[in-house]
Length: 287
Image (cartoon, rainbow, N blue to C red; front, side, top):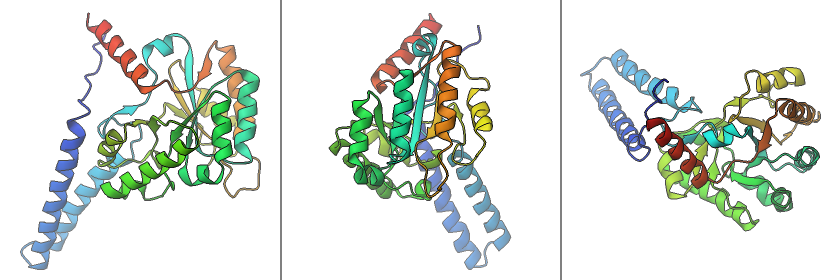
């Protein structure tokens, strides 16, 4: 049996990465100062800037990367062994789409986790309560879903995450997970989530249902190579598009497929259960 990959201590590496990034930025400031003083050619300064940005963007644009801090990508082995697949929905709640998604899930006896945006939850608190009433979980997907979320300062990140947390808690939800807008994280996010007692969640498979308009292509993206323990990403938000949300066509086919494969859709387990299962699995592999 191959040796399991070593885990990077979540409380050390991200902070070292943050420190390294700040040092790099400091060097960059000094380099451009040298350029202004004509001690360094501007092309060399531009090269340093390019290396710095490339290294940062490579990490930011890697939603499933664990180098930026704890990041749940798959369910624990125990859940996978039971045939569980986590179903997650981003960007809601949406007064048109979310109720229909809930009805479809009810028909199949499926459970899911809804990563909700604080501003939309504040406008539709009754939908958050309905999600909870139907047996699903509500998680944090930021307050505004800002395009530049990954470029926020530590203070701005904390304000955004906590604002969404407060909105969701006032509706009766207890978010324990966070998913960054579009999955893009900065090196500063891990510490903000640690202080808020939140765990970041990525995904194993996504259907690109907000981009693709062909239900068959979305269905193929979700099911090709699908395995127990996977975390699937869909959206329960139609946006400004007047056309019916494609997820409403894809979801029944997906749930039928899971049933045929003797798999079942579940919400994300509480973090302490997930972490305990992972620790138990690691100990079993070592023994």
